[in-house]
Image 1 (cartoon, rainbow, N blue to C red):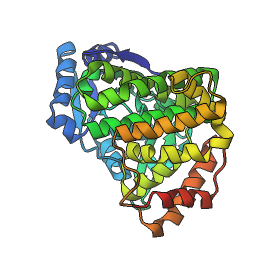
Image 2 (image 1 turned 30 degrees about the vertical axis):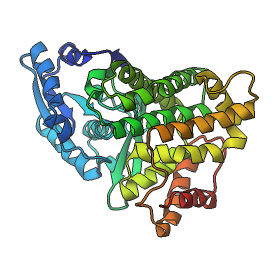
Image 3 (image 1 turned 180 degrees about the vertical axis):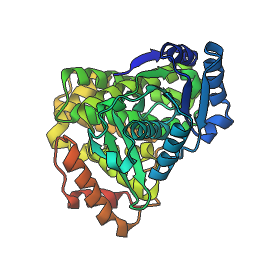
Length: 377
C-alpha cells in the first residue's frame, strides 16, 4: 500500500519527497493533453521550488492503452537520461505506462518478458503516482496493463513491487475533467469495488475498503458529473477510486474486466466505458451465486433497507447500478463491436478470467458470447 497524501494543493509535496530520496534526475510520465493544459508545468514548478538542482525528463508520448512500442521508447529515454526516480501524472494509461517503464528499466528486459505474475521482483526507483482521474485506482495497485498492437490484445504485468511508493491525490487536478470521462472513470472505480467484494478472495479488510468506495461513488459521482468544479465531490471520488484500488489489488477482479480488456485491446474502447456498459450484465449473470454480497452492498450504501430480504436488496443493487448509468448517460451498446469478432473476444475473455480471477460463478464461452451479442449496436 503506498503512502497516501491527499488534499487540495498536495501536488507541491512531490519536491520534498524527491529531496528526501536524494533524487537528482526524475522521469515524468504524462500525456500531451496535460502538458498543454499547464498541469505538468505546475508539477515542475513544485519540484524546482523545493530542489534547485533537480533535473527532469518529460515523457509525454503516452496514449490511451499504451503499447509495447511506447513503453520501449520510454525505457530508452529513462536510461538515456540516467533517471533515478519516476512520477506518473495522469490517468490509468499513464500509470500503467510508468509502471511498465520502471519495471523494464530495473529488470533490463522487454515488457513482454515480464507479462504475468511476479516476473519483476525487484525494487523500483522512487515512484510517485499522481492521478488526474478518479477511476483506475492504479496509484494503489500492483498491476500494469499493456496493449500488444499486433495481436490486438491486452496483457498484464502483476507484481507487488509495482505498487507506487507514494500516491498524491489532489482534487484540484481533476477540476477540468470532462463530464463523460468523469462518468466512465467513476463507474470503473465502482466496478473495482464490486468485483473485489464478490470475488472469492475477499476479506473483511478488503470488504471495508469496498464499502467505503461504493458508498462514496453512489453519493458523489452524480455530483461530480453534474458539476465538475464541486471540490467536495471530486475529493470523495478520488478517495473512492483509491480505496477501490486498494481493495482489488488484494483480491483481484472478474468478468467485467476480462471482457472489457478484450474490447479495449481489439477496438480501443475506453476501459471505463467498457466496464460501465458491462457491469449490469455481469451482475445479472452472477446473481444466483452472489446475491447475498449484492444485498450487503445495497444495505451499506443505503440502496436497500433492512426490511428488504436479501434477494430484493440484491435486485435493488442491480437496478441502482442501471439507474446510475442512466444518470451518467452511459451508452448501452458498442457501435465498434462486430458480430464476426464475438467468438474470438469471448474465447480470450474466458481464458483471461478462468486463469486469473476468483469469480463467484464460472462463465462458459457460449455464455460470454451471449452477453456480447446483447451489446451489438
